[in-house]
Amino acid sequence: MALIELTGLTRAFGGLLAVRDIDLEIEPGEIRGLIGPNGSGKTTLVNVISGRLRPTRGSIRWKGEDVTGLPQYRLARRGIGRTFQLPTLFKEMTGLENVMMGFYAFARWNLAGEVLGLPADRAAVRTIEDSALAILELMGIEDIREEPVERLPLGYQRWLGIAMALSVGPALLMLDEPLGGMNPVERAATMEKITMLRDSGVTILLVEHDMKAVMETCGRVTVMNAGRKIAEGSPGDVRNDPAVIDAYLGDEGIDA
Image 1 (cartoon, rainbow, N blue to C red):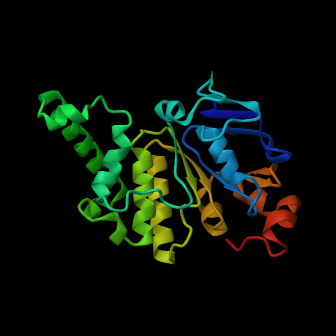
Image 2: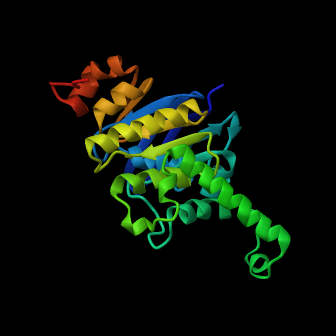
């Protein structure tokens, strides 16, 4: 069974069809690439899958359950996580505090109880702190636990954004251009972290413009243009697809 299945998924903004009739299945354990030119509808598709936007028509099935139109928090509780093109972080907080914020949305925890020193609430906060530290360690960035986010370089901020997304315990993690603005060393380290997450049991949908990274890491690639899916297959098949070359890659294709 597919982890997630989209059928005829469409999202309109007035008369503009930003996503039109997308059929997509992602299997557990994949790193699936999602590519296409700017304005092709990739981020809109991620927004619809995550519940940030409601589909105009079509359906979303998650582990066989129809979840079409559910709000973002309910989909997150089912295991659908995502990051954003620009890291959405609490800049005045530390790295550890940022990841803890992701847990608070689902914790059985009471602020008044912690202030009053109630044992159950203080224990819950300790559990959240331990869990957040474990995620920082998984991502290999535990050294920023006490570092204010505003002092962190871009690479660390993007890794921290992924760590925050992991706080919901996602089975599917959608990464929206995680390599944007990174230097070559940061890009290589990020792809190693993404592969590590896949190996730990998290299925990945990778939206990215770095074609070398996509072609080297993804088992299958889906290509969008003007809101439609125009191709899908192995990196080699997609790289040589005439429609993809015409719409996105150009005559020189990908040098990977």
